[in-house]
Each structure stands twice: as structure tokens, then as C-alpha cells.
Length: 145
View 1 (tube, rainbow, N blue to C red):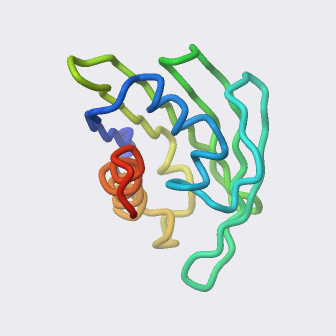
View 2: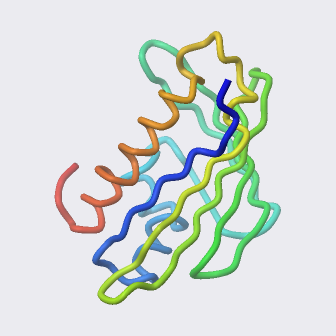
């Protein structure tokens, strides 16, 4: 089993402030990431739980913010209610000429039940690819997703 982190990078032609708002402000996050999320704050210790219904199943997402460097770094634990396993997602923003590079690192994904296709690496990788390369990119470009 591959236990290496999932890493996805993308450079956007948007300012670091715009990308930071998109990944930390719930009004923005609901438009490209999870519409089910009621609230989010980029503050260490903030916790949120919300349920996503996907392919006939409910997934209880549980996040707890563990590190924040405003405008640059956001890290939170990511668990699923009632499912063994623990992972962490780190978002790193780097200013680039004319835009912002976002590097997402998801560690611990392999701790979830690998017999369930929803938690396998390929599923997680394709989800992050969609969110960063399609959904967030379209949102930042102000195109419909």
C-alpha cells in the first residue's frame, strides 16, 4: 500500500489574497469546495463537522485546524465520523509572478479502510485533482464549474 502523501500543485493567475479567501472563507469555500459546510475559520483549534452525500452514502467530514500562517499556510486534521483513520491536509500558498502557486499535501490518507473504494488513494487523488485543477481554478477565473 502506498503511504506517501498525495501532493497536488497548481498555479493560479490570482493574487495570494484571493486564493487565501477561496480556501478559508466559508462563503467562498461553499461555492467551489463543499456547499454543505456551514462555517469555517482559519484559527488553530477551530472544528467543523458536515455531512456530504455522495454516490448514495453519507460521509461525515470532521476537520480541526492545527496550524495557520495567515495568507500562506493552513493545516487541518481530516477525519470521517464513524470511520477509523486520521489524515491531515496542508495548503501552502507561494506568490509567483502574476499569480499564486498552491501546494496541497494530504498525509495519512492510507489510514482509512482501504477495502472501501471511496477511501483508496486513487479516489482521493482524483478528488483533489478535481477540486484544485477544475473547481477552484474555475471559481478563481469566475467561470461556472
